[in-house]
Image (cartoon, rainbow, N blue to C red; front, side, top):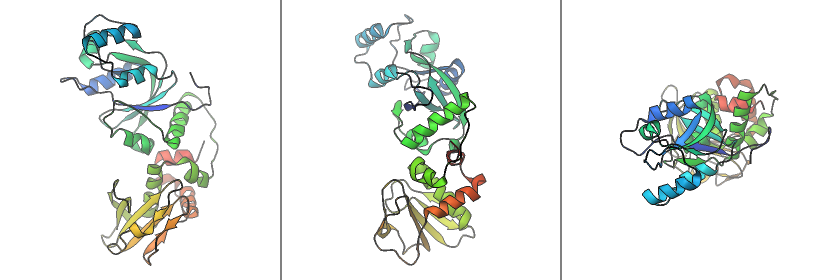
Length: 297
């Protein structure tokens, strides 16, 4: 079912790449972007050209066995679904699926390992700072096709694509609403990181994704004091007991919920939402583009 003009559609992430030796992944991506298509492999490799879905399934099963789940999901995506991909250079694209599945098995399909195709209208987005953090992180997975479930990333992707098609009027949004309801976890971490670097003259020197106590390590510009920061979105509290307060000069904590557990040490500073709101309005020019964009809907 195709979404209406102001409804949010599903958002997917796709790797346009092959496991077949010798396939030029860059050429495959460029071909899809240039031809207005998105595609994946799992071909029959018999050169018999186009097939209906039923004939494709029958032919693939006779030749290779069960049809991969990625192909079935790709076939079933609704027209209107938004889909992210990126070039190896790190340039991101956002497309909208414009038509139904089709299969081809010609010289181009075999050379690029792109047999299963959907017509797609692509829009160039640019570098990572313009892309929701949840989408960027989704590209770490080796899965061919992955649904983006984060509400903030889905909303942003829909608005971004819609604006590229229309002159939709932008309306200012309260920064508190942006922080509390719109930013995804990674975007929130980015906001706090930029705030600490600007407000307290720290530089971000290391970022951890698997450390329960903090998200990143910072160091004063002169190479002196060190700090860590813990940032929690949604209703998740910050556990102050997990901060390594004995090995750093300062520890920063921010929970959107305003909830903190454990004992607060003298060198721990809990950031207030109002501080971040003032920062977003006063230092808007240094914010990542995807955060700035949330201030206008």
